[in-house]
Length: 348
Image 1: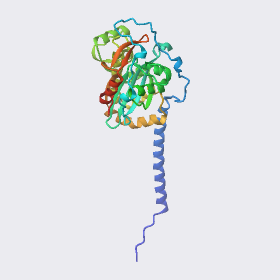
Image 2: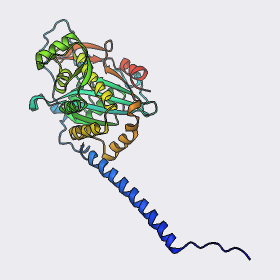
Image 3: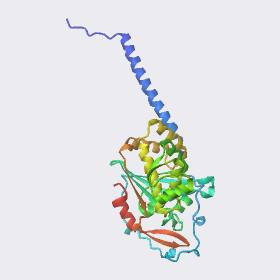
Image 4: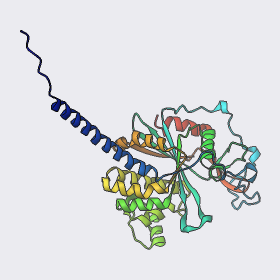
């Protein structure tokens, strides 16, 4: 006679169902709680409507034309805007950067609460290679003379931002330099001061001139060489327009950003939460919430592995220092710059 298969009791079956239901419920609660936390932080960011044209300045009302009669320095050549020879599209190489993520970071300087002093003070493309975790920070100098598409007159690159916001600035960078921008973030420099305070200061390399300048401006003595700056001193260092040219100023800004990044990699969970609470409300972006979430999901786990290099456009040897329409500007060699972007700057 064959053995009968043991029959599982109804009580045991009910117990299994209860356990399974309990586990699923706990997992759902954990996942839901995590999503609520993530959604809370994502909602702190200001998401701009890409279809909003209220801030657009029509080409005819474009600002920053300059004064054609103004030329105080006879040692710098004057060029008629009609004599500027831009390369034909077929003469410069397109950059095939589809596998890179290019994020444009715009630093706003709302210093001393004076609306007349608000500037797109820095424009930095963070180009990220997801496979190699290489990152290039590329500063675009605001006094660079470029072609502005859409019927606008050629002008300084920061006029593109003042006239047409994120959209026109992205189009201008792509048109002149061949870099496709995947998204933009604008941040107020005052937000960096809060971050630096949470991190306990930032470490930078100061020249003696820079140390003397900070003493004069802030009344705080800091030694030349590698030193740690407190938040207000670091902010004045980043804002310094007195020493050197725009190259020196953007170098100081990149130094601060790199130092913040290095401190950020070693920050505790509590410090990261405090940083998020401070910095996220100061951010504005043209990306959607789901795109930002995808960005965080992709790159946050790789932060500790990232290797960062910094560059600026145009670098010495890639431009002429000239006067155009009464504006002292940097006239870039677009062909040479695109070659450098492909061979040296971008993390291909």
